[in-house]
Every structure is written in C-alpha cells, then in structure tokens.
Image (tube, rainbow, N blue to C red; front, side):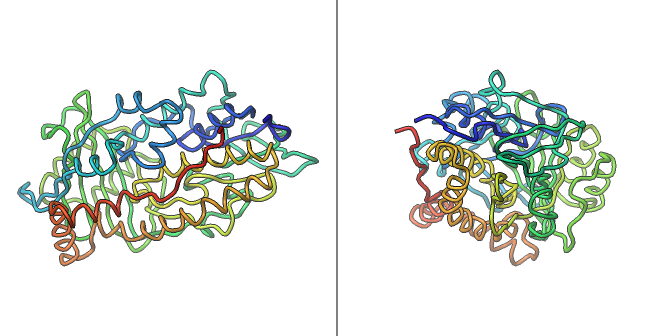
Amino acid sequence: MQVSSNRNVLVAGAGIAGPTLAYWLMRYGFQPTLVEVAPSLRAGGYMIDFWGLGYDVAEKMGLIAKLRGEGYEFTELRMVDDRGRRVGGLDTRAFKSLAGGRFFSILRADLAREIFRTIENGVEMIFDDSIAGIEKATGAMNVAFRNGATRAFDLVIGADGLHSGVRSIVFGEEDQFEKYLGYHVASFTVKDYPNRIENVYVSYTVPGRQVARYALRGNRTAFLFVFAGEKKLDPAPHDLTARKQLLRNVFQGGGWETGKILDAMDAADDLYFDSVSQVRMPQWSHDRVALIGDAAFCPSLLAGQGAGFAMAAAYMLAGELFRARGDYGAAFDKFERQFRPFIGGKQRAAKRLGAWFAPKTRLGLGVRNVVTRMTSLPTLGGWMLNRMLADRLVLPDYES
C-alpha cells in the first residue's frame, strides 16, 4: 500500500516524540521535516526507567542494543534518613524480572539522541527556529517560521512538549490545558562529587522536599530535586543563576548531603527546572494539525513513562496515517479513539505519584517508606510491582 496524499509533514520538536514520528513516517513513505527551537539536540536531563510501550517501539526500530549500551542497570532505590541510613526502598531487579528482562534506565537526552540518529541522514532538519504562525490554505497549511520564512505543508504535528508552541497557536493558551499538580522538579549533573554508589539511586526526603543522587559514567553524578508548592513558579527561567538561587532558597538547611549538593551545583551548567503538570485536552487535532506526546497528554514528569508513551503515540499516529493512505481526518480520529482511554487511565494514576516522591507530611513519608519495604514480601511485592509495570495496551502491527 502506498501513501496517496498528504505526504509532506512538518513536525515541531526534536525530543522523543518528534524524531520517533519522523522515523515511522519515513518508513511509510511520507516526507517529514523537523523544526527545533534549540540550536542543537538538548543535553543533560534526568534518568528515566525504560520498559513497556517505549521498549516495544524501540525494539521495532532496532534500537534496543544501542540503548542498553547507553543505559544503566540500577539494582536498588535506596531511601535514607539524615545520617544516610536506609529507611525504605526497592530492589529494582524485581522490576526487571517481572518485565521479562525488558527493563533498564537511561538518561532522557541519551534516548533522544539515539532516536535522532535513525533519521538524521534522511530528514530535513531545521534547528534554532520555531513556528510563529499557522494558517489554513487550500489543501495545506501555510507555516510562518520565526526566521521569517513561510512554507506550505500538508500536515503539521506538534511534538514540542509540555509548553507546546503549536498548541498555543492552534488550540489556545497553555493555561487552558496545563493542570499543575503541586510540585516542581529540577536536575543537574556535576563531575567529581565525592559520594558515589554505583548502580544505586539514593533518595533523601523530608515533608514536601526530596533530594536524590545517582552515579553516571565518566565520574559524573546526577541530582534530582522535587519540592511541593502551592503556586506554580516560572517554569523556564532563562537565568541559570536565578534557577540555582531558587533551589538554594527551598533546600538550604536540609539534612543528609543537601548542603554539599547545593555547593556542588555551583559548577553545573545544565540545570533543568519545571513544574510537575499534566496536559488535558478535549481533542488532540484540529483540521490538518495534531498534537502528540507531552504537547497533547503530558502525564507529568514524575509519572516516569512520558517518553515511552510519546514513542507509542508517534508509532500509532504514523501507522494510522499509513493505513488511511494519508486521509488525515480518519487517521487522527482512529489514533485518538485508540490511545485516549489508555492515556486517561495513566494520567489519573500519575496524579498520586507526587506524594510518592515528596510526601507533604511526616505521616505520609512514614507510610511511603513502609510501603516500599513491603515490596520485599514475595506475594504482596509481586502484586504491587505488577500493577506498576502493567501497560495494558497492545501496539497494532501496521506492516503485517
């Protein structure tokens, strides 16, 4: 079956969803163009656990061996008190066993880079630019770029993240769709931090605040901060110094290694900071424009599966366009009918995860620590981990 129409597709965003979509569109005979506001692929970022739908899509793309080579095999999530003593945690090898070995951890930036490598020699790539306007034309969409150029595309797909520009232009302002969940998150990496435990994720929590660290290759250490807040703060301050000062204001005086970690932050140049939010929209497409990934249905960063869901959405949207031979209306509708019920359930479950990372009371913190220790009990632990790992969505086979 050949694509009969609407082959020229502009994809905004070169993170996870955009390059995955471009890969499958190319494979099915479409001509995707990627535009990315950053001058190059983004570095830094945080660690994600990779399994389920994301693993399935990566396997179809022939990427598992490369991703495992870039990834990490953490054996333990260790929760500690002020003195570094273990008070809770998980043996992550149990996750891997229940997932049939289809489970590892990887930095989000490393995952994005390996996906991009599958398309970089076959896709027109526009860095350091963005979409400034989209207007309907006869049989196409006229797209104005920030650099002043205007081009026509058959379809436009917004895969440009939580703060999507495409969504704002076509569907309305962000505050209509973003639902703040009461937390913020930050991460950065440094070299030569003295306290390292290979393959162990170490987490320290007091009510409303969490600091965690994990060792990376090259004598680097990554840190993750999570903290509760009644009001959403500026999600992307451009001043690195201001971001660092914000974290110092929130975490100064904390126990365990918090002071040393804040001192180490002085040397960091890759500080990521954002609100923990979900995106909930009544529909993901309008005319010849559609959204995927965090732009359409961000489950929240703390849900831990956003990258996998973005990959699955990209795979399915491209597949439905292929099956429909470019009939975008039918493809957008079929994709959303299949994927929306699944992602809705994941969003509802994700709303509870902030309390897992940074419980707001000492009672909640104690309950969380006890629950994590209970995963060591074979029957109960197996049931709990199975619930956490279940994706409950089978990807269609579009090429059979």
